[in-house]
Image (tube, rainbow, N blue to C red; front, side, top):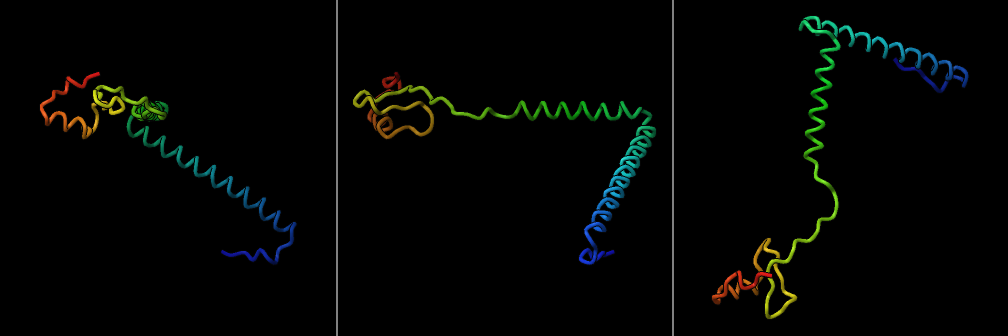
Length: 120
């Protein structure tokens, strides 16, 4: 169904809009009533009340929401890790103990030094 809107006057277009809005509201109400009837039928088939059926769904949604919020990490800036090791020959060279060992530390360990010798 196609209506040629170009041929309609402003008053006719406004009337058409009002009619369409009324029809849309009626269809929405009919859809809600149909859904309510279907929910009632399902609840009756299960032997529970509609309130119990909907309450169970709401409690599951709350539990799921709590789980997802518990898993979320806080956004923000992390504090830098504390320095655990320092090069005694150059105090600007440090290592937190995370990630790859720096070259200065690897070379010192290969030459017989112990990791504890560099602990801060």
